[in-house]
Image (cartoon, rainbow over all chains, first blue to last red; front, top):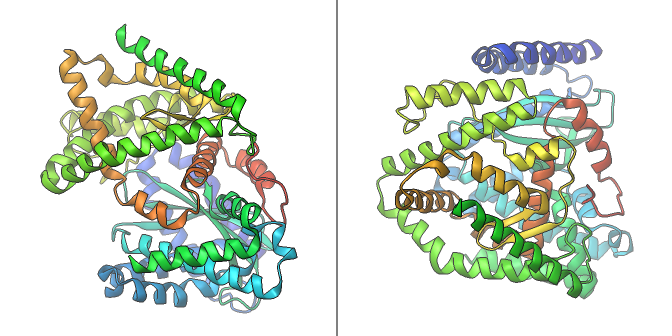
Length: 231
Length: 252
C-alpha cells in the first residue's frame, strides 16, 4: 500500500515536469498511466483501495453507463434516479452530508426530523444530479489527478478533472474511509468548479431554519421536491 | 475614451448604490454587507433577462444554424484566450500560459482568426484567467460581494478589475463603433445561450436563488484565485474543512 502511494507521487512529479514542456505528451501519458495505476489498485481487496484508484474506477464505470445506457439518453427522470440510486448512492454518506449542511441545528433535531431531512435533501440532489448526467457528453472523460493525504488517512480529498470540452472542469471529492462501503470509501462532499455542494447549502438551510425552524425547512424541501417532480 | 469613462461611471454608480445599501442592511453575511441593494439589482437583472436577453438567446439557439453558433463561440473564445494568456503570465503559471498561448496561435492561424477551434481536438485546452483573478493571486482581497446592473455577480475587486479586462479585450479596439457594438451584443447573446437551462436547474435546487448564486460565485472565485501550486490548495482546504464546522464557511 505504501509503495503504491509512492508510485502515485512519482507520477505526479513526472507529469508536472513533462506537462510544462510538452502539453500534448501530458494528455496522452496521463490517462495511460492513471489507467495502469487504477488497474494496479484493483486486486487490493484485502485492504481498502487507494482513494484515487477508487474514484477513477467509480468515474470510469459511471461514464461507461452514461455512454451506453439508453436510460441516460432518454432523459427519463425515474430511470435516471434509479440509476443514481444503484450506482452512486452506495458510495455516498448521505447522513453526514445532510448533517453538515444543516449545521448546529442537526444535533437538536429529533431522529425522526433527521430522517426526513435526509430523505428530502437526497431527493432534491438526486434529481438534479440525474438531470446533469443526462446532459453529459459522450466525449467527456474524468481523470483523477491526485489526492491529498495518505492512503492511511481516514479522510482525504481526491482531485479530478472532466476533460473533453474545451476547458478542463475541476471536480473534487471528500472521502472518508469506511470498511462497510463497496469500495472502502464514502463520498461526503464534492465540488464542481470549486463550489463545494454541502457548503453551498449551509446558508440555504440556515436561512430557512432561522425563519421557520427545522420543521419549516423539512416542509420547504418537501414542497420543492413536489413541484420539481411535476415538471 | 468614451468607453472607459462609461464603464468608470457605471462602476462609481455601483459603489454609490452599494454604500447607500450599507445603511439599510443588517449584514448577515460578512461578505455581503450590501445585501439589500444587491437583491434589488439582482431582481432588476432577472426581469431584464426574462424580458429580453433570455428570449433572444433562446431564439438564437433555436433558429440560427449550429455552424454559425459554434463559429461565434469560437471567435469570441479565442479573443478571450488572448487575454487569459496575459493573465496566466502575470500569475506566473507556465503550463497554463504556454498551453493557452499555443491554443491562441493554432486557432488564430490554422483556425482562421479563431473561427474554428482546432486547439481542442489537438488537446490544447484553455485556461481562463482574468485580471480580478490576477489581483487575487497577488494577495488582493475580494472585498464585498456586488451585483452589477446587467452584468450580474461580482466583487469590489473584480468590478475594479473589469476596467482593465475591458481594456485588454481585443474586441474593444475594433472600429467603427457600430460594428463593435453589434459584435458585443452577439457575444452577449452567445454567452447567455450557453447558460440556457441552467437557471431552470437553479430554480429547482436553490431554496433562495440569490444567496445560492452568491455563495457559489464567491466559492468559485476563491477557487479560481487559489488554483495554482498544490501546496497552496492544501493549506486552504484545511481551513475550509467542513467537519462539524459551526462557523460560516465563507471566510476569505
